[in-house]
Amino acid sequence: MELDIKLIDDNGKRLDGRSAEELRKIKIEAGVLHRADGSCYLEWGGNKVLAAVYGPREAIPRHTQNPLRAIVNARYNMAAFSVEDRKRPGPDRRSREISKVISEALEKVVLTEHFPRSAIDVNIEVLDAEAGTRCAGLTAAGVALADAGIPMKDIPVACAAGKIAGQVVIDLGKEEDNFGDADLPVAISPRTNEILLLQMDGHLTVEEFNKALDLAIKGCHAASEIQKKAILDKYQSIEGAE
Amino acid sequence: MPNEERKIVLPSQILGDIKSNKAGRGTFIENGKIISEKLGILNANSNFINVIPLEGRYEPTVGDFIIGVVEEALSAGWLVDINAPSPAFLHVNEVPWDVEFGDTEKYLNRGDSIMAKVSQIDELKKFQITLKDRNLYKIKGGHIIEVEPSRVPRIIGKKGSMIALIKKYIRCRVFVGQNGKIWVDGDTKSIERVLQTIYKIESEAITFGLTNRIEELLKKDAKDVR
Image (cartoon, rainbow over all chains, first blue to last red; front, top):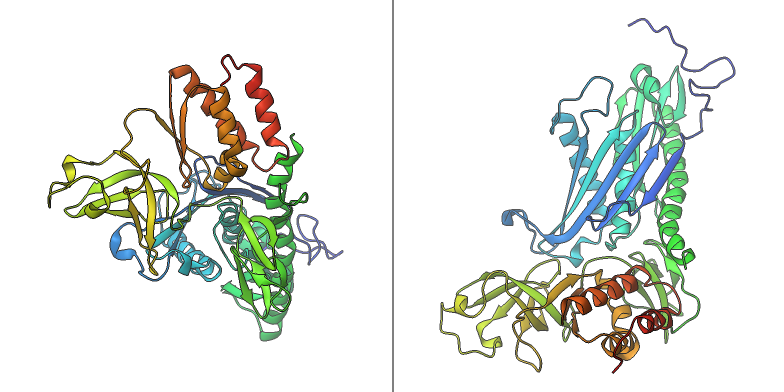
């Protein structure tokens, strides 16, 4: 395909005016749903994601129960209206894969041994998509889990890095994702810098990979601060309402 | 209020060192540091660092008085939903009636509510409850509501002060289960007022001077004070 857009202009600015190491705007609100045990609404650039947590509750069907620990069921779903062409509703290959990798990432931070035979359900609903929805979804899930009062070792957070026009940059936007060279979503546990999720689409050399990973981890820490502030804000607003 | 300053802590927040303090409830130890495991309020009590949860499911402890809803009648007992991560078991020997084997449905059936006590928790977190104690019985009539289990201590108040307040100003019977289920009985109007008061307590649970404000509120439209 003939590339007729310049992903990085002569001043080193990207399509949306960001520099190479600048994140998109992130807005997080905790506890937005009343029926769920914990919830979170997150806007990450053009992404709009809603996450809801239920449980811990008895795992059904019974054969999925683990007698020693809880299982974490994350369900990533894209709304039909989240993309330009209508997305056929229902789980597909892509969303099942994302559900699986997010479940495994969350299972690493939740103290599952506290709740034998139970399940913790995490629903991630993508309302509006603009590249990097799995990172946005996982970040929202982290806030929703904390809001649900689920014991965990850390609040997981995710951020992507990638390569566009031969340059390593952080947090790819829509055009950058479609016409760029590589995308590297990373989820970490910010306290220990443990990697919970790492996927790569495209090609990177070893140096580029290391640079992208460092950049993504830096982005994770920035997003983590916003997450923590969002959770605290929910309680500050109640105390202030006297 | 034990300490004037109420500090909200997040999971993964480092709270102290195991050399100078001991890790209490809601915390875990990693590399010699005490770290919070959930969203809650920091509470330091004689060397122990605790985190009192702000949200979350009910975590049963032996001796808790709770309200449960029967899920299923089995041949040797009942499975009861007590708002915990898994249902609790009520054995036929733990009820005040003489139940013949297989006759459990005659006494308690799906949907019935009971006031019960947590009697045993084993290492696999299987919960056992009992009806053999004072004031424990099957609930007939009244109204059951659910509140956030972490707010229950505020609804009961210090040594039961808040609940005593409600009973003083409103003619009703109230039983607060530790698992966040509350049973209220009385005439329709007083039930409604009790519920309003409880929801107010729940939504303002982390503010200061709540007991006094609730008393003023109840005083305002109290008719017969006992």
